[in-house]
Image 1: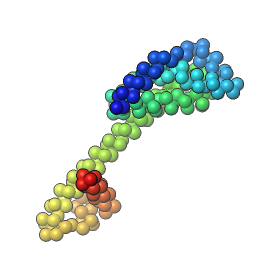
Image 2: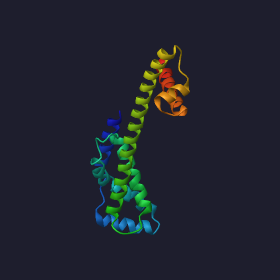
Image 3: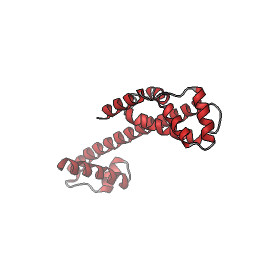
Image 4: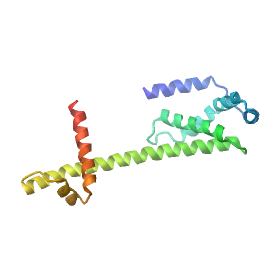
Amino acid sequence: MQEDIFQMYLEELKGIESCDEEENDRLLKALASGDQGAGDRLIEGNLKAVLEVVKDYLNQGVPAGDLVQEANMALVMAVREYEGGGFESFFREQVKAALLAAVEQQSMEKRTAQKMADRVNRLQDISTELAQELGREATVEELARRMELTAEEVRDAMKVTMDAMTLVER
């Protein structure tokens, strides 16, 4: 589904005329004079250039559509924040920073999810071990000591387990 939307976006871009450096300069002057339509054209006319930057960040864990969205928002912000100098290099740097942040965020979320999954699996194993050793279910504090975690961290792992079980039951 998301791939279809991305393909539709690419098709739409074919019908948009890109801005050259001269048009960018003219539009930037008009925008500085208060012409908001110039800003809209500046954004629209540089969407293909943004897409070229996006291509360098594909297949890094973030869906293409999300990358395009982040990049386009960075372009919008660059047009709003531009204060002079080379416009194209300015917006490209803004776009690259936004895309790098999106890739890093996705990577961090994956690491966090993996860490929590590992903790839940370890909790289940240790819970079973302690139940056999003690002849009863272990308390949160006993689990925390054995796992070398805080009671709060153990409760968080238990909550994840319970939430997953609730979803499976539905």
